[in-house]
Image (cartoon, rainbow, N blue to C red; front, top):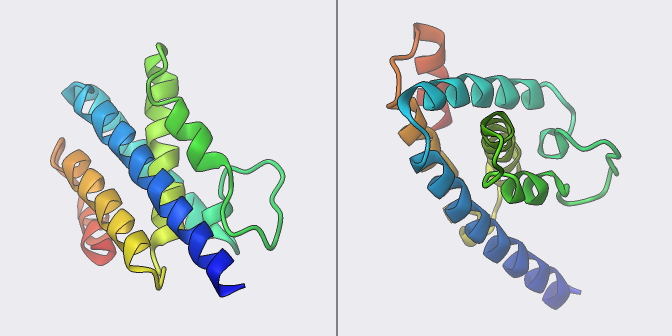
Length: 143
């Protein structure tokens, strides 16, 4: 059983790394105004997920209590290259929120590395605009 769990964690880590690269590339393609909107959307998504009993399942229409992760991250990552800028921005924000909560307290070193990637992308977005006091405190506490 431990071998199966280890294999699943390895597969998840690999897929999240690939998704993070796609999200980072999409963030770099945004202009300043678009980044500001993504920052606002991302903070709203992270805060909305934080009040849920299982924040890593945020955005899932059919939450299953014992599922270790939701398909939301994969769907959002596939949409970060969409032609619609609004869908692209929403997908970036949703992916960051879901993966932030999924990897936040992971005991696996590889998933912790994914969490650091998410924080790095958030830092890049944060630098796009000045934050108010409460947002700056939130980013400081998240890091």
